[in-house]
Length: 144
Image (cartoon, rainbow, N blue to C red; front, side, top):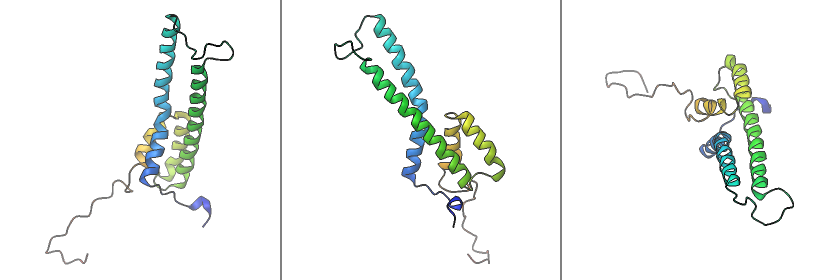
């Protein structure tokens, strides 16, 4: 069987990891804005922003922020690549909607990815609309 025809089956821990990586860029935006706002207030109050008392190189908080920033961008690109590959390898999304979802995932990024995750990756049973099996009445002659 060719690799492009293999169905992706994800275990619950992998789904949790994908979900955490999906929401990290959204969490990071709030962290980033809050950190910058606090830094501006600290600088305006005259609080030193450098841990070591040297003047060579950028402040340590800036270096840490850049590492977090670049890491978040790398995670965002990796998660987008995963969603596009998953979209075209799964049968959970109707064939007529795959192109639409690809555009939405690419253009909508961090907003569309949690929605796609919740609709198509997180549910264990598929299709999600499958009726539960109910016990038959005793008078029903059909075999189980």
